[in-house]
Length: 125
Image (cartoon, rainbow, N blue to C red; front, side, top):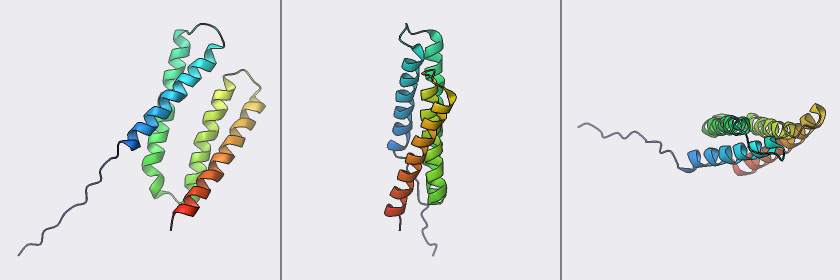
């Protein structure tokens, strides 16, 4: 008699796609708003917002899909890098010095990495 075997089906949650898309849209609108510099919205500002938002959405989606396969230290570094680069780029649109933009990116990246490590350390067995 043949044994019945079932293959577990991995269902994709709607949050796994909705969260990166939402973050990408918010990031893109924010980048376009900062890039316009108080003047009228141009096609270049919209293009910058679309590209920046798409890049953040794709990176968040990929990080969300691969985070379970990473050790918690690497996962924390990945989240910190993504947050730090994102904040540093947005800050660079304000025409500040490159050192200030890098400093802001490093500060927020370190904070995100520490928070991510703490969350994964306290919630994983």
